[in-house]
Image (spheres, one colour):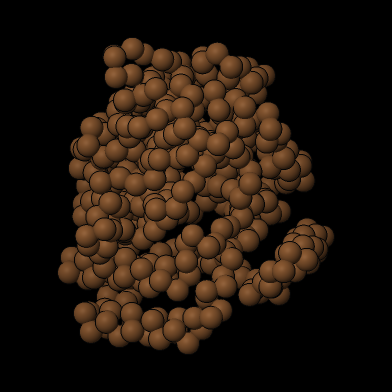
Length: 420
C-alpha cells in the first residue's frame, strides 16, 4: 500500500515539475533498493585498492570529462535534484574485518584528490549558480509496529509553519550577528567546549552572517547557519552517539585548532588505530584534515521531541537530525563553488559569510579550496549546555541555557520541549 502511495507521490511530483517546464531525467520507475548485506558492502568498499593508482585516476577523470563533454548541453540545463528519501531501516553498526582490502596511505591521498577533481569537473558543466534542489524524507514500514503513527508525525514535522518559524529564527540571527565568537558547551557527560569565530560585517544594517533556513528547498524547516572564520575557531566537539553517512560513531570527539581538525577519536572498536581509520575513511574521506564548513543552530524542537517519544533518533536521516540541535559540518562550506553569488535572507539582508580561509584559495589555487565532502555532526538538546554570543566588547548574550532557548522572542521553540 505504501509503495503504491510513494509511487503516486512521485508521479504527482513529476507532473508538477513538467507543468513548470522542467523535465525529469530520472523518473518514478528508477527505484533502487538498499544493500541486502551492508557488512559485505562495508568490507568491499575499498576493493579498488587492488588497482587504484595515478594512471587509473587520470584515466577515470578523462572518462568523466569526456562523458560530460558529450552531454554538455543537457548538463547546462540541469536544474538540480528533487529527492524523495526514505528512512526507518535498522541501523547498521559495522564490524572490523581484518581480511578486508584497504587503501594504502598513498592511495588514500589519490582517492581524496580524485574526489576533489571529480567535483570540479561536475561544477564546470553543471553551474552551481544556475541550479537548486529540494529534498524531503518519509519513513518506510521497516520503521516498526508504530510505522503508520510515525508516518503522520513525519508529515507534522515536515509541515511546520514557515512564517512563524521564520520570525523566531530572525530573532536568533539578530543576536548572533552581534557575535565576534559563539561559545558552545555540553552538559552532563558531554565534554563539548567549542568557540566558533564569526566573520566581520561592513554594514550590519544590510548584511548578515547567518542564513534563515526554512522549508523552501530543504525540508523540514528549522535552522540558522553560517560559514565560520577558521582562525579563532578552537575547541572540542563531543557527541555520545551519532550516525554519519549511515554509520554509527560512539563517543565521537573532534578537536579543532584555528578551524581545522587537529585530532579525532571514537570508541567503536577495540584499538585506537581502527577507530581513527574508521573516522578518516568515512567522514574525512581520507584527507589528513578538514576545515569546519558550517555552524548552525537547529530549531525544529518538534522533531526532536517526536524522535525521543518513539526512541528513533538513530533511525532518522540527517535531513531531519540536523534540525534537532546545534550542528557543525566538516568539509566544504554550504556555499562551495557558489561563494561569489549574492545571497539574501527574507528580510533583505545579504549573507556575507559564504567562504572561509580555505575556500578563498579558489582564487589562487582551486585544487586547495575544496574537499568534495560536507558532513554534519549534531549535538542533541539533552547533551547541550549553553550557547552564548560573545560580542567585540566582551558582552555575553545567552541563546540557549542548559538545552533551553532563553533569548526573548524564541519562547516558541521551548513549547515542544516543555510538553515532552
